[in-house]
Image 1 (spheres, rainbow, N blue to C red):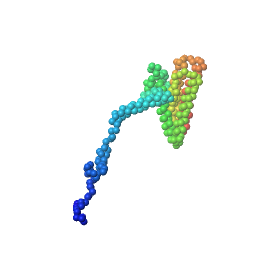
Image 2 (cartoon, rainbow, N blue to C red):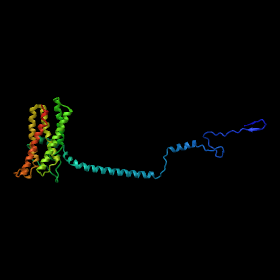
Image 3 (cartoon, rainbow, N blue to C red):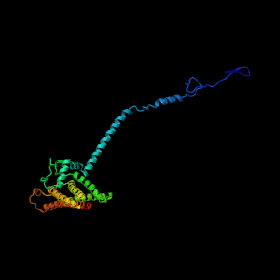
Image 4 (cartoon, helix red, strand yellow):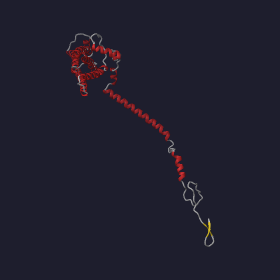
Length: 303
């Protein structure tokens, strides 16, 4: 823009170069000192925001083998730990043996319960073997099991709670005392038999689990006695308990004599010697202790 001055000359007014925001800058323009990278930088940032930087081209190739190696090492470590745990656990709790004592079926349970209540007509009391290994209980009624003792113990506690409830004496504390006392007496009985067998040096194949099984069979007679007492009063309790006590005595004698007494005594021949006499007395004592525990753990439940 030109305008006249006082001297008459026309003077051009210099206007500053104004550039719109976002317009491209001319690199030949001397007035531009710095490039405007605000919009272009934002575009580059936005265009590169969705893409991961590929700083290491071999990282994708190395990550998969390393993860597979870590998974293989972890699975190997877990299997090794499980093997060690099973080995140490089997040392204290013979899981494989416990499976044998619970290998039962409905037919076996029914026949074994009948044998516990009516053992007088049974003739063959020997346990069957297959390649020096006793067959599973479901195939041999004479084999000891833990299913009936465990279920008998639980049922006995439930029946005891029912009996206490009918007499308005039920409470969780009393039921807990009943269960703990029955369990403690069972442990004392098994420990006493083990100590007796050790003192008289009896060479027998009886195990601790066998003794627990034979000691737990008395719960069947105890349940029958308490239920009879609830239905028919004290007279029904005494009559049914007496029958069950005699039955468990006969059952224990005929079962343990093949395992504690010598082979000659098991076959019915004359037994001589102090050690054989001690074995016979021990068998009689174990059998006689069953009715005592049956009465001791049930007489207070029937009134």
